[in-house]
Length: 361
Image 1 (cartoon, rainbow, N blue to C red):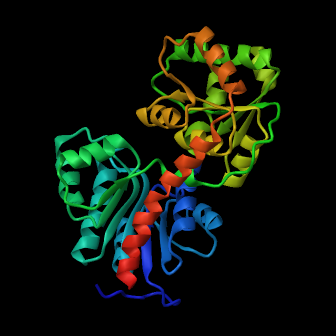
Image 2 (cartoon, rainbow, N blue to C red; image 1 turned 135 degrees about the vertical axis):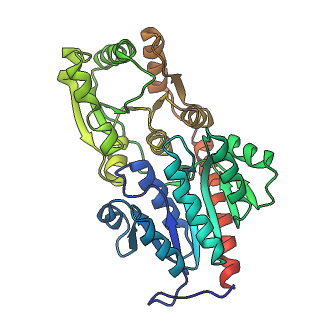
Image 3 (cartoon, rainbow, N blue to C red; image 1 turned 90 degrees about the vertical axis):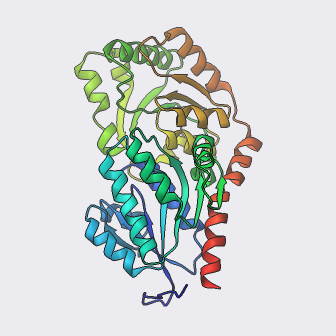
């Protein structure tokens, strides 16, 4: 393959595609890890919804508007390789339109004989037969894949794909973190979910109120996804779900940057997370953490780190939740286990850079 070296720096360019610039700190964390681990002989170009947000995370790096398919396809033609970076991009639960968007990028790159790498990906959910056929066919053209969970790897193996594949824990396990110093705040990284009706939310919030009062904790409602989570606390207030005592203890923060979030975590007494990457970022910092699972990926991550976890449903036991949180608050996470997860998570960058190195040399 002849590289274009189309940048002013003379370096080959690589287009990094994902849910970036969506005001979701989880995607920001994935991008941060990818950029830190990318061989510096490559010049990244990033697709972004809010380009200013991504440029503040990665100063000096070129971005393109991911909402304009024509603009992104033009960028594919102007780079030397394509990475679909982190998360579950090949799924149709958000919309078939989103899936087709990424499939088109793959097909465009392959038609131009440019390598396509999948980095730290989850596969699915793929609810429609057409979606499964589309993804299975497209994956046969991929240069290399790293999966972030066993179910994705198993599905790919079931399809008998003749593609180099590896598996490792979510790449964010390799993110750096400040040391935990403890404090008197309880941080919630919660999100709206159809798994809880008003009764279910009452049970969960009453448990929280009793637990925070028992331990005299200030409660920080941290909106990890700015657009989706920011109104949750206000909605619960309007539904008369938040007891007065809890309201007096509560403040709402919007997650604006990874350093801001990690500082809050490191100075907290404990984190209770629904958001996957909130759970991981808290755990890598050694913060006492408990999980509330709305998706199997949250349960899987909690199990990897031996973190207590409850499945969200409308029949939550207040006694069980409070007991679980008490246990989590006094339990130190196994540093050796967290370190092992960080090492294992580096398989994604290892495979990526080995493949990219072959293109240069």
